[in-house]
Length: 502
Image (tube, rainbow, N blue to C red; front, side):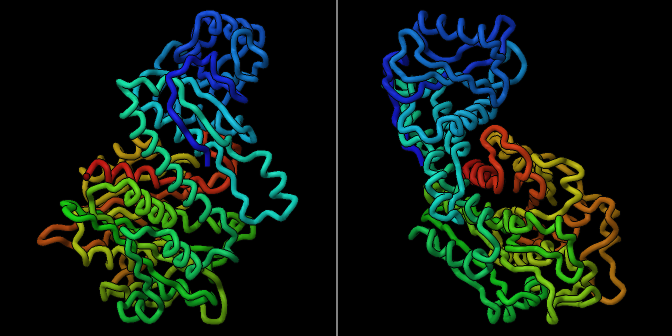
């Protein structure tokens, strides 16, 4: 991970491997952002005109030996968007991600901040950190040697943030951003880890190892799950040699007036069980624990930031495989709340493990519960690969989650839970069934989960559901600060929600 320092030195005086300047589309050509000497601005603009640069999103134009510039090279990074309009924080974050990739393998860089807002320093650090991320855990000696040439830039100076009147606020923004980068990249590491290396027990061990003193960790093994009557997760995991576990992470600082509970789906590999997926449908199914990774990383990040709010993270970890002991369509299991559930499709396993987690989380009567899950292919059909669905039993919480995601730079879209879908839960042999027709699959899954949210006093606990099936894993092209593989989606939204409530 790169190190960052604030500086008020002039950009042209920075002697480094690369100077980064952001540019926005404009009618007269790319508009260079930030503080630059007039002669340098003119020299850069002239070269960009010759090269026909447009300052589009993900566009990086390298310029060598620019007159009057001490840096070995200048990288002009486009932010995209409409011409002659101010850049949004997310546009800057994405542009910084492209810069982070472009700077890989270099020892030093200086970045001209595009505006004078203290928070912009944090946005740029986020983008640089996310964009420079690489996963090397499974590489051999030759692969590691090659990866070393693409390691994140070692040191970055942020130009324009070191002036005394705003240095303090900029330092706070950078420190927050560094904590977010660490959390998101840790979640990405979990998602990218091969399923023969990451299974319920090893996932739990990684959480225990990563937890600071301010976070307590309790692991519910099979015996404890049986005692709690968690038939949903036990049924899902019974076909695997790796037994299921539920991990409870608790961060409870003194004086916290608000209590949130986050519940994450953690299917470390999903074959579909006896309702077997196709071979191509299994290829990326190591990512089916992306919700649990996001929850775990969010709790750790909230603790590192020292937010004055109590947060529990419930990680529902299982492996969904077929063998002679695997769960069958037609089975009936008893859930943690004592109700029974008829199994219809063993490839709809995520809602079963989440249901038990929601029951356990409800017993502590938090002020709100949010679950995060790579739950339904229907969410991908509806919203694509970059946007998550937000559903809830409470309009205010749904709006707050949407606002938190937008502020964090994660794309979400609110969806309803139509009451008529609840009729599809009816079973002829059990209290309910967990799967129905394909139409409205995302909405039906949320209707099922809602049944397991408890009450606080006379009212249901406010509950929100993030279906991140689309954006949790990127097997398409690199864009902005998002490379291929696990994205860490959800971490920033959960942290921002905790900040809203603090």
